[in-house]
Length: 306
View 1: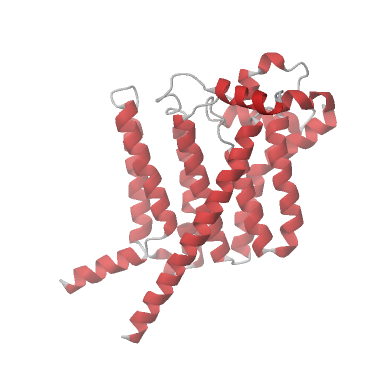
View 2: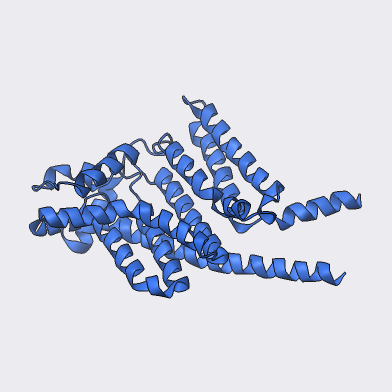
């Protein structure tokens, strides 16, 4: 009996906030599929996919390989990033489960009421081929920014900062994905395509940005901007823990957020909502991870005192 209790305590001690956040997201997705997608084509495949994700998280918790090697520790902390890539791909089949058409008109009318004009339409008079390139570079750089931040923190062995960044980014992504399911939005490049009188063209980064969006983006997953949410999180974490990168990180996140609107990939409302979600993800992760580490230290001290 005591060995069973010890095994249960050991399993619980390896349960990290990132595991709980990921399991919570997957269980919500399973519930959404059962309620809104049951009986529709592909629903069993989606159910199997998310059940497999549950198994992966449980395996990560069950096997303490992170305690024996640095690569194991890296995998233990970063594994949700890989899952998020697959979660995003799966999102494409779920976007119109609740509503059968995009809800762009709500956001567009809201922005007209606030600004009197669509922000992307308003900046058309400043469009220039080199500004197109600069903004497209900023939009395309997001993915490298996120990956580079992970690699840098791994090289610097800033494990606590890395884990907080992954946790807050995962929370932001999960919230963005769920909002997209219940509030599908196509984005201004689709809904307002007929009002833009100047095309965004350029020789190098502009085509790259368009390829990224056209090949990897989902029609209906525009609200909110997960790029802005995660870019803000990465910039904040780097600026807080690597002081020399504070100014470059601020510049990059501003560029990414502006490029989402300039390039007509997101409404201004979506980009601002993304930043708010990023702030929320940071707040939750800081409090949650700090409490987790404190409880772990107290538990370790109690075990040594026995």
